[in-house]
Image (cartoon, rainbow, N blue to C red; front, side, top):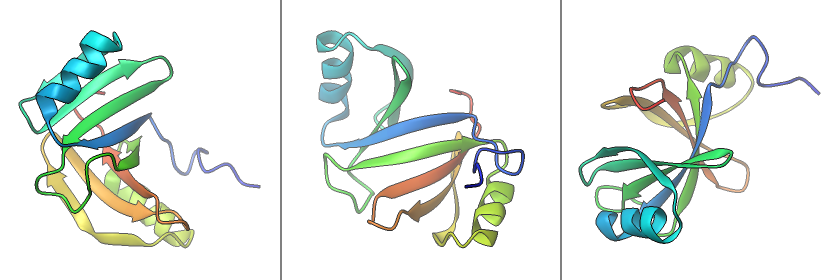
Length: 126
């Protein structure tokens, strides 16, 4: 079986994103109660937490079609266009166009069971 992480597609990070109903309440829970480190915070729009072996992104439910508690998996790439093109050549279908959401550029897809995934171009928090 070919390795998707080969020289053709290089992932530089993974980010488990959780959709939350209240950003401050969630940041407080993950930092104060669970003791995870807050790596970056962009107001009430996005936060990145560091846990052993995984980064966790918190994103508010407002402005998304996802409900609080929904989870998606982000895979970091150096060039979102190149990553998308490579995966499309391998039969992966993407949802919509590449989205610019500073400090990130994103391309969205789902796995065969409907799990939300996204490619994320390197940003200042990587």
